[in-house]
Length: 94
Image 1: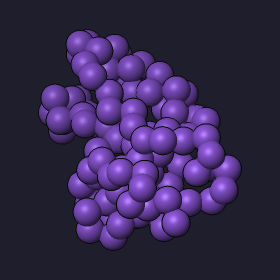
Image 2: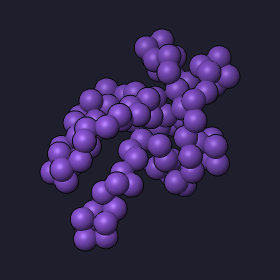
Image 3: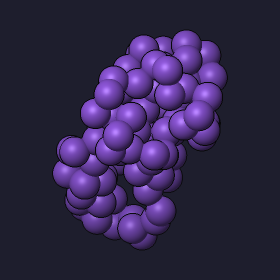
Image 4: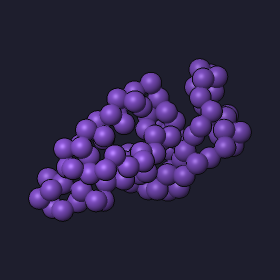
């Protein structure tokens, strides 16, 4: 599908909200700490949030698997590996 619609160069993983498709941006842990579950607060420090719906994202335990899938797709399309913003790959709350 990416080839057919000529979208390969538009792959920009982990930059959009899964709920509303809004843009994600970094947010300080101190600003959202009160919204985090105790174990998330303890084990994670880097967070992003959706500018539109305020959903939170952080690197969850499955982050590497998702990044590997994106790398595989890029390789199949003959694209350079390119940077993957994995800060937002993972778990969401909100």
